[in-house]
Length: 152
Image (tube, rainbow, N blue to C red; front, top):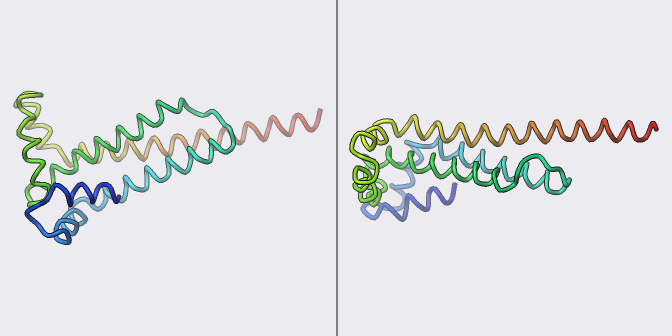
């Protein structure tokens, strides 16, 4: 959450810091808090899993999936802040999109930035919840195996 708001501050030279943060929170509050919740849950589950020495997922794949979805969701959510005067530096980045992706694809990215940012948010939250469910199943399986060992 702090990183997101820091990017808003750095890329918004034409507004006061308080106005930029206020605009970002009004427009993208759900994405900002959702990403913070999803990343926090993922870190908690990963740390808990690491302490128990459970192997639930490939660590590298888990980090890439979570951080990649967070970056994509954040990137798309910045599109909605540009018309408000926030993140003016992103206009320069957006101006390169047609040369990289083509005009039609760039228009789609800009037009559907809100749904795309929510898709990224749902990916982050979904992956965190999926990892938590897998940890719970792994713990349940470990308890069953341990209870069978005690009987034998």
